[in-house]
Image (cartoon, rainbow, N blue to C red; front, side):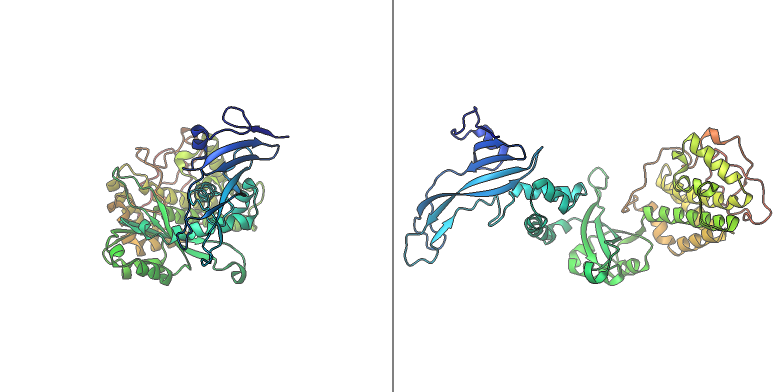
Length: 453
């Protein structure tokens, strides 16, 4: 059963500007709307006009109209547009054109089956809402290949638009794992992504992806920078990266005047990874097996990945019980303290205070008796210039940390965690858990300053 309506309820009516505005395509009039059980059908047309042959220019003879079915942006139901497309015939017998049909690029590409606005909508869903081609095809009620055939040329045109590289002064680079399948059938696994980190007039970063190229290597980044030209490279003042020597070497070679900045997200991620390594090692040493249900350290693995200022009273109590369950667990707590100290450098009230905390990390971590923390300290010392540059370049990174709360430390604990344990006076200056050490205490006092050389 269908419900055919016009602007005032009549099956066939004169064009109405209000209905035409709903379609949003200039020169295309809505003639009829039919709502069925599974889809909404909109019949449209363009006004009659004199048309010349596209080849010879002779006034063409009208040959009526034909219906062309297009798929439009879906609502509650898939939407189908029935375009009553005009046809003509060239009267010149010497012209090889013969019959031809009207084209309206604002409505649909030649030979396309999706409206232009449906293609734009689909690309927006892909870019901003993490949609998939398969999912969008289901919503549009078309085949996967039909949608991809319409979307692909538009994406290729956008990728070839060099205007997106204009006015980029801060550039970030990072790797991306595209898939985990067979390279022979799915192509390269690793990609290198370039991100625009240029600040606007208000000092805010609106990060946008500039490009993705196959490979994770110095050559992949160098080749991309070379293709951009001397003008683009000369305009880059800050180059953010993760701790990968290939990218750093490419920056030194191609962006000589740019300041290399170690990305805050990756630095904090390194600290979190160290805590997880220590937790797994201590778990294996104390129990002889990987974490199992009921093991104290397994129960706090997600807590150890969080910032101390985000923990609830209940989480602090769980953390306290797990650390007190075995003296050997003190190593895990010390490593967690170190990770919190590293994180606090990026959450300081101002860049000067952050740099001071970062310098303390550089001067202490490499002397820590916990081997994983000491290894992180040596890594940071190798990257000390790019690590400290964060605090002199207004913090331009690919993943800015959370804004500072203004507190003296990002690791201030909940008061509920204060009464239950014994204390460690310092983190990396104290002996590891397998040697004679001071009793352990989880305190709500700031952790910053506990790591001493």
